[in-house]
Length: 262
Ligand SMILES: [Zn+2]
Image 1 (tube, helix red, strand yellow):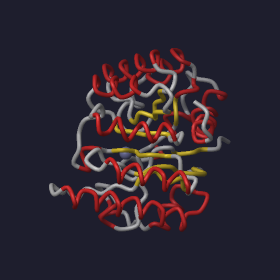
Image 2: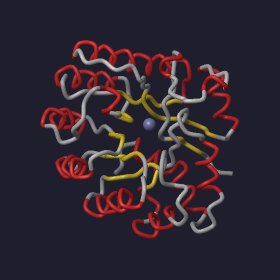
Image 3: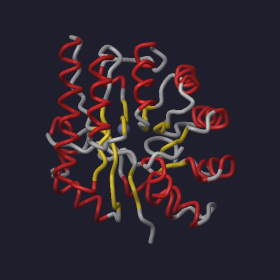
Image 4: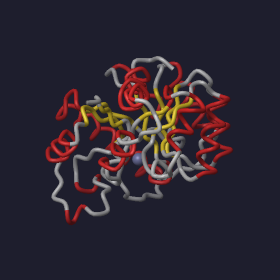
């Protein structure tokens, strides 16, 4: 039996923060979600609270960030050891974002993200204002989990902060996945979580492990938008990698990353 840490989830306090497209047919509460995940033998979850409300007024965008971050801390209280919160930052709010990082660091929270820029009204990972926020994240030894988007801009971001631990979300389809591997080659601080699109492609996991070892692959599902059972099966039942690799992917790598090791 493997210990499983789901590095990529979006827990919710309110229905508006529950991004499951099929929630109408699944009664879901904060408490029932924990029970459901534990029923799948998931020991711990990580990640940010997100919501799909779109704002164009900058003040409203920042209020949304604050609301989702506050929900993450409230969920941490409710869930205890089961949940490691991830906070949001926003390049239109450099000073405020740096303060959020300082507050998180003081509270022992070392995870930023998953950042999902398109949900929060921003776009570029190599925006100088965002890179300034990452300087502070690096100084506080934070881990940055981010939604994969424009390939060249992700390259620029990762190259600009060689000492910051990055965890890219979603292997993606073939060409995106190969770019993730390229980035791993250039940047030892670059990791990939298995959530979302990609894991269902036969051989993808073996290629990742064969190329760089299992050390930089992290288990994630993207619950509640995605079905964790499918991702557990995709790793657990994979006969092309070893049990030792599975142990690293399911929990050991996440523990190492969150304890500060690259
Ligand atoms: Zn996500």
